[in-house]
Image 1: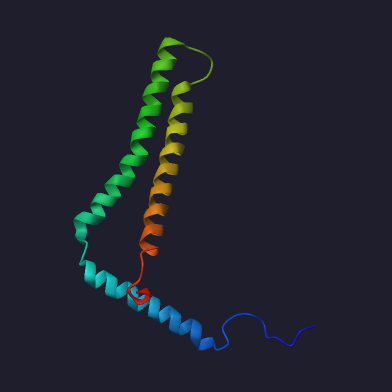
Image 2: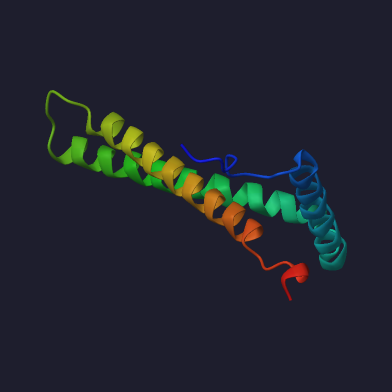
Length: 112
């Protein structure tokens, strides 16, 4: 057994100070970049909406075409509509996660 203390902050205030420093850096960056406004938010909402709607509608249209030209016991329209919706949701999730990561990975001015 070693007499070394467990790794981690020695003073509980260190974590708190780091959190406050990070929040202050984000606030300064937001002030430097300026307000984004309502149009930016509406644009992002529209972009996410289109990234879900386009594959969903494309899947439904492809399914309608297959059902019309090759009728069968199963509904290709429904299956491809659900597949398009799943693909669209995955694309939107991936895009939002990437944007969130890029906002968090920007270099801070305190590192310079």
